[in-house]
Amino acid sequence: MPRRTRPLLAALALAPLLAGCFASGGGTDATGDAQDGSRLRVALAFPPAENLSPYGADSTILSRLGVTEGLTALDANGTAAPALAASWRQENDRTWLFTLREATFQDGSAVTPAAVAAALTHATQAEPAPAALAGVTLTAKTEGSTGVRITTGDPDPVLPLRLSSPSLAILSTRAYDKKDDVDPVGTATGPFELTKVMGATAATLDRYDDYWGGRAQAAGIDVKFVADGTARASALRTDQVDLAEAIPVAQAATLDKATREATATTRTTSLLLNTEKGAFKDAGLRAAARQAVDTSAFAKGVYEGYADAGVGIYGPAVTWAAGKRTEPVGRAEPEKPEGTRITLATYDNRPELPEAAQVLKQQLEKAGFDVTLEVREYSRLESDALAGKFDAFVLARNTLVDTGDPISVLASDYTCDGGYNIAQLCDKDVDRAVAKAEDTGDTAERQDAAMAAEARILGTDAVVPLVHQRIITGVGTHVRGALLDPYERTLVGIGTRR
Image 1 (spheres, helix red, strand yellow):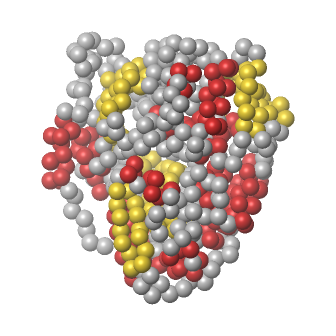
Image 2 (cartoon, one colour):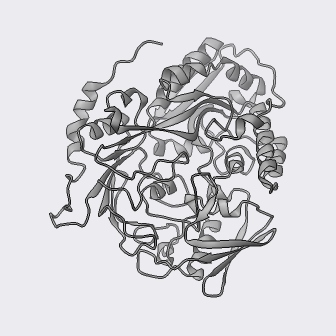
Image 3 (cartoon, helix red, strand yellow):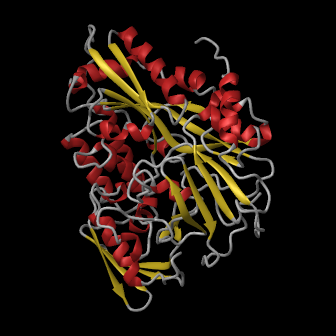
């Protein structure tokens, strides 16, 4: 692979454009009034794709900025921990009772059982359904002055884990005033209140002083959505931002070592093949595509060592997976592509993906495919990808983001009724394997069932894992308390300050 030259000219050209995007540092707001604590300046890679609805991909934006919370949260070990629910207990195989802590919404109303039940009911009625509720039906009812009883249609042994999903955040009743939109502005419960959203370019957050968990040390957050990774790195390097997410690996060396944090994550970058229509409806051609891929070229080349070669849907950050992995089941024999035309798509919010797609294009063409590459910004690509308009798609997916449960991503991405099934996979054996895993309560047995389902999915060649990523976050040397976790749900919390 030829050595890349770093795009310094582009970075210098973009720097003046970003200079006016962020308030200057120090303890003042935009009007010059004194603040208790400085405001944080944050550059995020992904602009809102769904008007900051909590039910889709935008939910992680709200979670990472400390705006929204659910009844539970994920702790460092990936288990359910108290959040808006102080405690819970299982009453039977389908019913759980959650006891709420004393808290208020950012509009001043109390977090009551009725408000929580209403919020969860709205989530169950959302179309499309949040990924955390894929294949799950639940009802929420009040129980006394502090309880919410949640009943699922089928036994759900990981319900507390499921409720930690950013897409099941609890908002006040005012958030649902509009029939078709959910408005998180001033209606959430986190330490920072979303006060202004400027389309897909910027947002302003102020500290919510009545947060149940304590007063945040930062006075607020000024957010810019900057899809260009070179621009994000340049903004950090020139002290225009305090935090910059998803620094491209090609830009990592341009940052001072003290300002770049590499975090092993549960994110896997994969090649997804459209199994419903087009060339890859043929299992033999999918097998040929999989056979053509050399994963080492991505880990060592594209990701410059900030990744591990793809071995499955779950990577090394899912620590139990490697010891339980089994061989893929039911793979077809490869066929000769003989010039078969395909369209390969990806997005540029994660700067490594277009380069990965270019390497894939070369590998697939060497195997005999005729490849057209299409690259767009994610929000302009998602609907077409979900509609199956591409033959192949390169996706970076956090395998534990939806619920923290390893089965969730299998259900949402690879089953007939999955809400994020870009591969358009509908295979009865896969659905049975995933359903068996979902019904398994014992932790070790659930992990075994997850790996059996992974083997079935890999056997279809609907997905070809490329790399397991380490995410690079730019953190200014003056910043303390940034929250970097393998699940990519957090970034700013009450202790984050400058």
